[in-house]
Amino acid sequence: MTADPTVTLRFTRAILQAAEQRGIALPAGLEGRCPADGRTPLALQDELWEAFCAAARDPLIGLKLGLDLQVGHLDLVGMLLMSCETQGEALDLLLEYHPIVGEGGDFHLEHRGGDSLLIYEPRYSVRRRERVEAVMACVLNLTRWITGNHFQARAVELTETPPADTDRYEALLGTPVRFGRPANALVFDPELMAIPLIQANADLRDHLKTLADQALDTLTPSGTAGQVRALLRESPHRGKEQVAEALGIGGRHLVRRLQEEGTSFKLLRATVLQQIAEEQLAHGETVARVAERLGFSDESAFAKAFKRWAGVTPARYRDTT
Image (cartoon, rainbow, N blue to C red):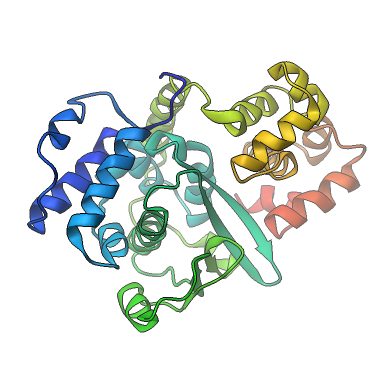
C-alpha cells in the first residue's frame, strides 16, 4: 500500500451496485476510474460518495446503503467475523482488522456504566454524515444477522445534530437513535458479548485470521494514528515521548497531529493495550505475565485498567473466552 489511505475494492463496488440498482446516474468516467483490482484510494472514494449522495437526493441514502451491505462487501473481514464463536470475539477481531475494509476511520470499544459502546471515529470529511450512518447501519445489521437476530442494541448514537425526520431513522434501524452525542456508537448490553454466532467455525476462523494478518501486513499505517498504533503494538512500554522520537517529531507535534486526526495518544495506547491484553488472555496467558509485558507496575494496576476497558476482570475474561 502507498502512504495514502485506501478502501477495499469490494466496498467501492457496493456503492456502484447501489447506484445501478437505484437508478442513480453517476458522472461519466467516474466508474471507469475505479480500479479493476487492488484497493481504492480514499480520495477517489470521497469523489464517489459525493457523486452518489448528490445524485440520490435522499437524506437517508447512507443509512439505506449501510443496511443493504452484505458480508462479502467487507472483504475477508466479513467472513472472518462471521466464523467467530461469540459476538465478543467478533468485536475483538473487528477492532484489529477493520483497516482491511477501509482506512478512513477507527473502531474502539468502551464501557460506560452498564453499557458497552462500539465507537466509530471517521477521519474523512466528504459526506461525513452519510458515510458514518452507512457504517453504523452496516455494523448493526450484520451483527444481528451473524447472531441469528439475538443481538439487540440499546441505541445507536450519532454526533450529528437531530434531523427533522428522526422517526424515520428509528423505523429503518429498528432501535432508538440518539443525536448530538459525543461519539458515533453502537450501544448494547455487555452480556451480549457472550452470544454464540450461528455460523461459528473455528478452523475457518483460524485460516481467515492468517489471511487477514497477511492482508494487514501489506497496509502501511496511514496517518500518524496508524503509525502510533503500529509502534505501540511492537513495544507496548513506549510512552508518548518515545513514540514521538521514533516518528522523528517532538511530543507536542505528535499531540497536534493526533488532534487533527480526531484522536489522542492516551486513547490510542489504551485501545492497543486492551487488544494485546485480550489476545494474550484468550490464549491462556497469566494475568501477571500480561501485566508485565504491557508495562504495568504490578498485577493490581493492570487488573484495574483492564476492568475499566472491558468491564470484567482479566481473570474472568480469560476464563470465559
